[in-house]
Length: 201
Image 1 (cartoon, rainbow, N blue to C red):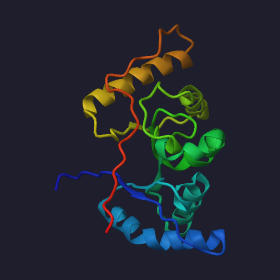
Image 2: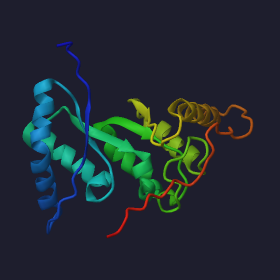
Image 3: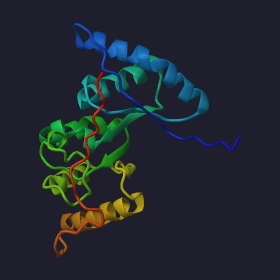
Image 4: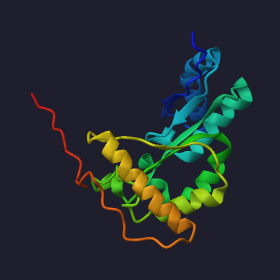
């Protein structure tokens, strides 16, 4: 009605298969109805990394490339989330080079090593020891597309966003070689995420 063309983001599947080619084809088959629905609406379609085989950068690229080559799906791309990429940090710069031609959005997060295993998966920017090198890799990659910050906790989303923006400003100043003060103090206290236990029968 209003000629809006929102992006659709969908978790990339993690099919089983004896070979990489078989897995790619199975992932494509599962995604194709959604890819075609987005095409009919004139909307971009993003493969969203969320762990498993489908969350690995190399597999995201392979699935995206197959859809573009064999189904003329030029509207398909990748939405990469740092908070789902803790296992990729040591090869992030190389992975980013491969993903860059396909990236629709790159979502930032405060990153500490093994944060996904230490109840520190979601952190404000500027609070992680890996934030500056990861942002430097993004700047040096030449990526100039959309950058996202996801309000991914149950805290006050405005305060969490302000914490992220403070951290981003502090980090960017360092990338530019400007003098900076101490690390920003978050408005929302940093604390381990709450564990929810399901009742057992």
